[in-house]
Image 1 (tube, rainbow, N blue to C red):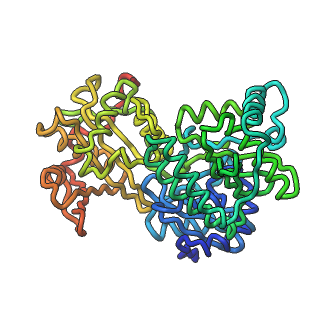
Image 2 (image 1 turned 120 degrees about the horizontal axis):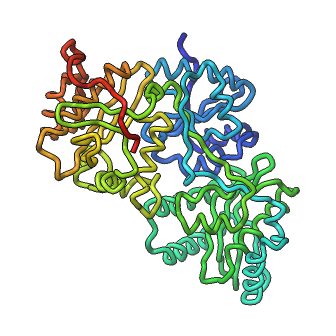
Image 3 (image 1 turned 180 degrees about the vertical axis):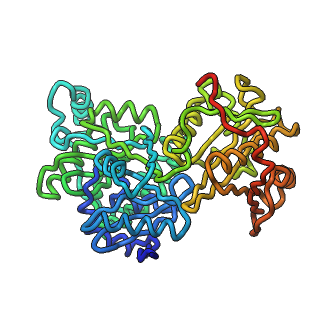
Length: 493
């Protein structure tokens, strides 16, 4: 049976129509708040769906489509439709921003086989006591009170008020000054600046609160938030640190103003995630969160669920194994070699999911997350089971019809020796024979070495577009006689 779901592309008018659902969202995660959806809709192909008084968001997460867990009058019925929808469109069934209350429901749902899931601490939201934030009373908030007292001694009592469209020039001046205070801002921070301006302009239409502290008639801070059920979600907190004690003063003042504007004291304040910024994480922990809202990515019926324990896959000259802790340095080099990754289609400098400071742990954590969530099957390429990592193969872009895309990249010192061809063919046979996948590959039209490698690995041309050539792996009786059967590794690390 074909699904009747219709997804509408993002627009401000569409978001406004979905506000009644959003205001009743039972989750404490910020990802489905109006302000968050508005700020971060660019580049993710965000779409909304309304079905039987039930709401769902579709967007691109990690390069593949994913859905929010439905909420409203008939979430179960919408899940049935999502199963039909993803099957009909040959896409994976994935859920993003799944909270800890919803995760057990998914795991127990017999309609959703073999779910794999993971969360990234970098994107967990911080939830605080609303009432404690109003006063900062008690010994644990002594530091915050001292900062506020210093602010008051230097600049007088905090003067905070709601901001209107007439204050836009002052907001732009503040954001310009903030940018000057942070000259080393990364790509994520630069995008946030653009989206902050856009969100301020949409505040009145979306029913958000925008407010600012003034020092000597100059706008020194900007906060934008919204109330969903018993929680204040703060989407923007910008302050000029030239004013000492400004951040705790801003935070407490905005919470008190929200209580006044909303007409009641709420239960929680959600100040969103720290995006892996260690300084921001330290600061947010100092405000004593009452709990963290972890956000799980769930992949239903992932081929990764068919792999039981570490495997070792021998090729002719190479061996494929799990990516190990000892591979961190090599994996960092593999991911940060911009020229080597040009045809891979990846430039880590434009990856907004990465923390601003890159370490050896960064990409290791990322690949472990992808595999734990069921989004990919990654193997290190080695010349022996215990040898160093010389490259990577990856099966990913899984579809509901049992297909997957295969990729391979080799560290520069090991290129030109046939290792890529060997690893590519070995991974293709493993995906087809052991995981039961229809394996596909692609390469840039002008990448002749990659094309030769793919075709020499048992792939046949399938189709092409302006950018890529596409290939399909051809399983043959001879392929089952090649040394590709998976065996257990003799060591896990």
